[in-house]
Length: 403
Image (cartoon, rainbow, N blue to C red):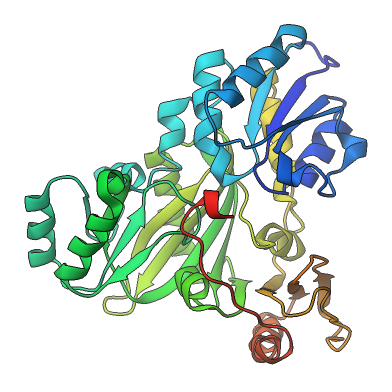
């Protein structure tokens, strides 16, 4: 494609995110379309970076989404379709396959949404995963429970985060859960529960190779925070440490196994308390949520959203892409539901605070420093203070339709 040609990016977002992606696309001189659900129509989207906004009741309802985009394409040449939210990844794959748009098709996208598919692909490539089984044949389930000590976790194959996960301690709990699920039980996977510390690696991939990757550790496993309540926290790791190098290696092998060609990824791994080994948990083809992208930027200087947009442009045009230079500061993030409509964080005044979340009924901040020990000390202190000053709890949702 000749230099200077104006491309049209169609962005799908079931939730408010991807602001810097769209700003980056617009700064490169391209045309930006945004498709959102009705309930997020009035969110603070970067209107100056968006040429047209389209609204549907839901982005999960097919074939309505397909019909809408096909109608849009009658008068517009859409060059690429980008899923900004995890819930849109598989839908976007189906749309690309049907409309013959570049990027991951339906089968490739499934590897980043279907927890059973991603486990099978990772295990086949020699990546260590917790023991698991599909939820189809009852004899297979009985064999699994006889071989693998409880507790187990029953996970939806295509929900995001820890949504809909159930922790089971005995076989009768599984049978009762399957009774409740009825005909939908094949949409779940049964997995061994591995106690351990949970990590994430946030990556940018170009031509099948991670060109940037940053490892971090959660303060508490996300499943615990989601189901039990509490403050969400994460902090970056020293990329030169043995632990970080191990995470970067398993992340590279995982992305190759899942067939990642280009884009952004958020992958999670667990280090088992019993054996100290790293296990693959799941991987998404998008930028991490809960202000993880901002944390990574304050640590490394790399804006994942903006660089993802540059990678997409390079992929469409066939041009080369070079990741920006990065630094190795430490950073950490805390976020929680808040009792107050607009929480007052003025009592948190340390110089290392570089970001304050402005979101209704949420409290959040990011700290950053060249001194990793200082970041860890502040996060530990703030975790306790957040629980007292702000923390509210809400029942966990089982699916996107409840949100």
